[in-house]
Length: 118
Length: 416
Image 1 (cartoon, each protein chain N blue to C red):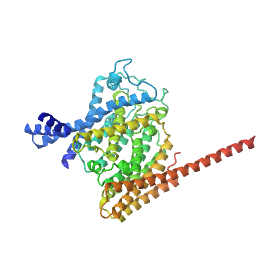
Image 2 (image 1 turned 60 degrees about the vertical axis):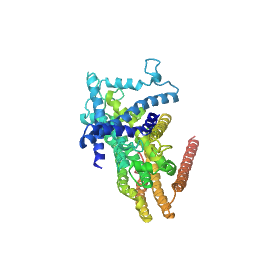
Image 3 (image 1 turned 120 degrees about the horizontal axis):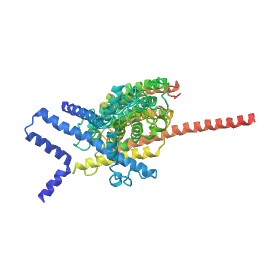
Image 4 (image 1 turned 45 degrees about the vertical axis):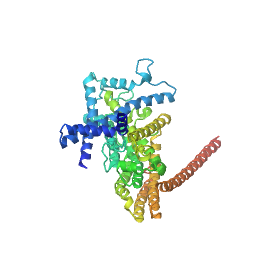
């Protein structure tokens, strides 16, 4: 068990260092001649206009809220799915009812128009 | 003759035998326990990390070549400058070009997330390979939470996209990042629910157990689950019909618009690495992983079968990516929330009930083939029901459209 996570730890370090080494190599090799014109922000060739860090569209926030319902649901469903083979039929049925309750939340959000893109 | 038969025995399980030989060599040098684990683990991790890189180098070439053929172009070739037979060295030339390109950094970027994002995006797709089973005994480490680990790290990419888009100080990049959040968190749900259905039938999160359960590949037992997982993963790796994050014609490049040189290269690499990883996961979950004929006699064949299945999925990804046009953002979100999520929920309930029902109905146990057949029938019923619902909806929409056109015509006559 511990050995497995030691391996995962080693892989994490290796996977972090490969792109870091590649970028470091590029940093050593590449020319560095910045000038103010070059470091303009790209906006299809025009002068950047107004504040760049624009506000969130509120729609994204609603989608994130609906997502949260199902993400938390998945946390509860993983143990259920894992224990599935030992569960009697009624326990599986209970799980299904739980899923249907959350489906009702989706239907509610749908009816309220939260899933329409405006 | 004896040498030949020994060679064949060695080759029949070459990867495991090389590993055992190396382990024996280290023990022979008198290495103690912590060092032994660290060195074998380190070399294993290096091989695992370089495997996707190697695949991707040739995959990029193959992708450009196939895309060019399908669009009546030549693609990478050696007609102008020499780039190997069929232009196979083009990718290496591009890599060298990116290495020596100047890094143009726009003013006002948020330095830490801006520089960290290209590293983390490669990191997130490289660590997935730890639990992918390449053969009966060829796997990085067979974690008991294997598929959960994959899901956790594949959704980590989302944070990286947000980091890149938000820190670039660019409106296109910010919009790309917002879209990334909306799209990736949305399509994560059907993907999760599809994996849950697989976990229920396999009874384990461990990748090798999931492979071992597939006497009949899950593609034939749970075709609807496979379809849901495939569509959701296409969106997760932002392949063309769902490629809203970088949408060249609207957002120019999306969240990585302000990256140049090798940093851009990292994002490009990660995109291909993600599709390789998804192909490998799909092959493991639904196509039976390394299982195939003659694997009992020669375990090395398992790796060959696995790579073939993975290659098939990569080719399918390329085919869809090259031929389909892009959706609009509202269509894409509606497709997820109004079609894929309800379908995945229905599929989860159906698989759970039917599979349990089969176990209850046959107290004496049931053969894998009977179970697979009954599950397949249930899936076909679900498919037909989905078809009926979508067709009814489409008919209604058609009627509304006709009525609206009729009203337009009448309105025009009245005003004339």
